[in-house]
Amino acid sequence: MPEQPIFEPRPAMDAGVPVPPAPSDDEAMPAPSVSRAYQCQCGRPVFLRNSECLACGTPLGFVVERLGVLPLAPAADEGVYTVFGEPRGPLLQRCDNFGSAIGCNWMRPVDPAAAEAQGLVEGLCLSCSTTRTIPDLSVPENPRLWNLLEQAKRRLLSQLLALGLPVRTRTADPAHGLAFDLLSEQPDRPVLTGHAEGVITLNIAEADDAVRERVRVQMHEPYRTLLGHFRHEIGHYYWDVLVAPQPQWLDDFRTLFGDERADYAQALQQHYANGPKADWATHFVSTYAGAHPWEDWAETWAHYLHMADTADTALSFGVNAARADLADEDLFHAEHLWRPDHPDAQTFLDFLNGWVRLTHVLNEFSRSMGQPDIYPFVLPHAVVPKLQFIHLLVAQQREAAPVDAAAPAGNAGAASAKVEGR
Ligand SMILES: [Zn+2]
Ligand SMILES: [Zn+2]
Ligand SMILES: [Zn+2]
Image 1 (cartoon, rainbow, N blue to C red):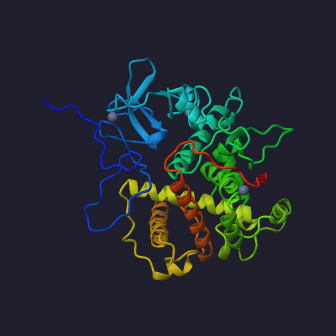
Image 2: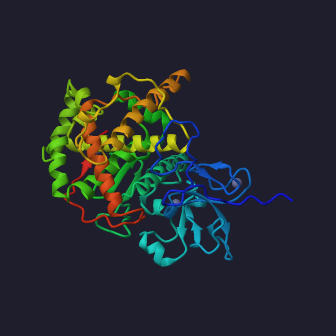
Image 3: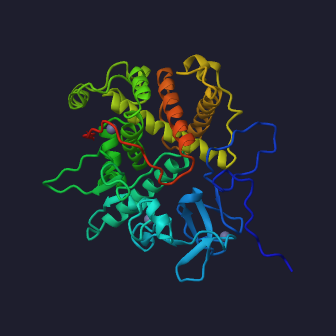
């Protein structure tokens, strides 16, 4: 009789998420910092959004403590689960929004103390606990837009957790915790995307492809996505939480990005009135980054998250662009770094050059399908020190708070509101 399939985690990361085996050829491939390839107990690949295995029907859910989508097994009580193959493990239940328009597949702990430690709202998972205002669901298209927004937010949060960054809800920290207001515009109430003291406001119309594409073209942007908005705004949040309260990092920030005490409203007004600076492309990752040091920070931060997630996904699925043949001048070298003598410098340089090779290949893929480039940017040398600053700041956080879902964020520093006006 054939044996029942057993869920056997393959060589795992610290968080217990299976990672693909090393490639068999002689090309060395770095390990992803967190696996983006998930697997059912039956061996079938499953994805971040899945709540049930299409092959074997096993329930699936995102388990915050394990940083991934895992197969689940029903426990004795109705609606209660454990991770498949771990009947003595912590009891989990589905987020109340599983049955809502967003079909949330994140799990929450049954244990009230564990739920409190994560700062959860009653009945909700960590991601849904960060949403303070949802759109009016009696408006016919809003359920679909809300679904798209929450999907993008779950991807954002899953990465922040994997990077070891603090994700602290408003329930845990009513003054500075993270809260998302997902608002729709009314004739008398425009909604401006922005961040103020942990509250991130997004216009739900941005979830509509036609609207977002029209704005993208109007603003001459090469890239505009929901995930990009979330990554940019969370950058402002982490500036308040990680940079402002640490004097040494704040000094270095000012050296690399400029002095953020420059008048913000005036800078933005100038940016919109006069257009981007003529030489923006040699200093910044985007035109908007040139508007003010805070925007440079948020744009570069979003970029770092794009790079890290896409590289992790590539590595998780065994995609290795190491053989992409690039000219030496297309690659980065130690002299381009902010801290070339840092013990981690070579790893960071390998990550950067791996990224250059990967996007070189991915963009050719896009072109061969007649699609816009997946990565429509050129990284100027001047952006590399800023990216390394962010890389080292994130690494510092990870070392300080290894894989803790609701790690305290420390005291927020000189918080100030940023309304993008875009
Ligand atoms: Zn399965
Ligand atoms: Zn949820
Ligand atoms: Zn911004």
